[in-house]
Image (tube, rainbow, N blue to C red; front, top):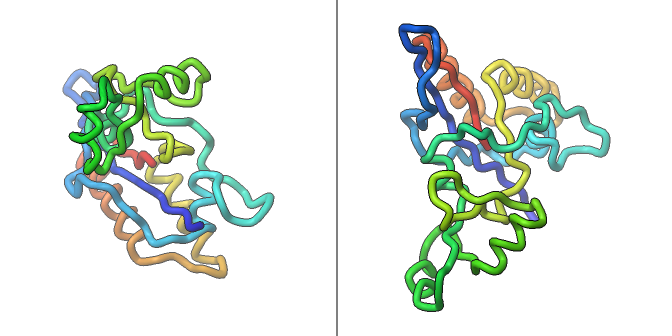
Length: 175
């Protein structure tokens, strides 16, 4: 079975008082499905790769202050009755029963979506984490020396993040 990374760029602008506003999706807005590179996945997320392979980005989980957009992309609707199932069946975010959702929260497996308690984080999307531009650059440099190399799309992602920083934004990749 293959492994993919579902990655979103978030940025926020520094205010005049030195604090930051809320996180928002980057202008490319959707999900970045980088070229499948198990070395990159090991460095960035601690999944796949070789046994004992160095993990560069520390395990942090999904940020508490994640943008609403990323939450919507990583959650499932909780069904209230069978009628809901027909509505959500064609959704890209698969529905779950209230019973399963409550069980996952109780067991600490998943948490509910902070903006709406009728959603829960999708159990098929796991190993949530985030990284800075510097951390992503370090992962890319490590991959450049590896057997698989690095796909051009990872360089474009890095350039995209750097362009925000040059304009005074704080930026991160949430995956």
